[in-house]
Image (cartoon, rainbow, N blue to C red; front, side, top):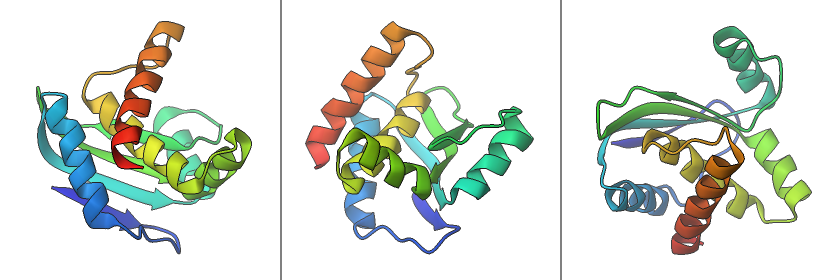
Length: 136
């Protein structure tokens, strides 16, 4: 089950479509959907999580906690709407495009994709682009 939770004054306009799209991504990656929670929040909210749980004193657009068991995906994906808005402006893309990319990014981590090396980042970006094209 994919759920959307809101810690700020924000709400997805297309929850059902996003759910269907994420489910399709998971299936196409040969994984099974478990409990995946998206939590949309502010910079301050996500910064506190970053400091408290990861000891990183920086702003970020997404933090995902992966509780997957094998190919059955479970986890909590925190997304800062403030960061997504700023990044959309910085990258000269629409807010919807950037938000959708970040939502895919979290689930792709659960599917086993990494982004620590240049090669991993290139593959992750390629996967994001592929699934983004299926949605936007």
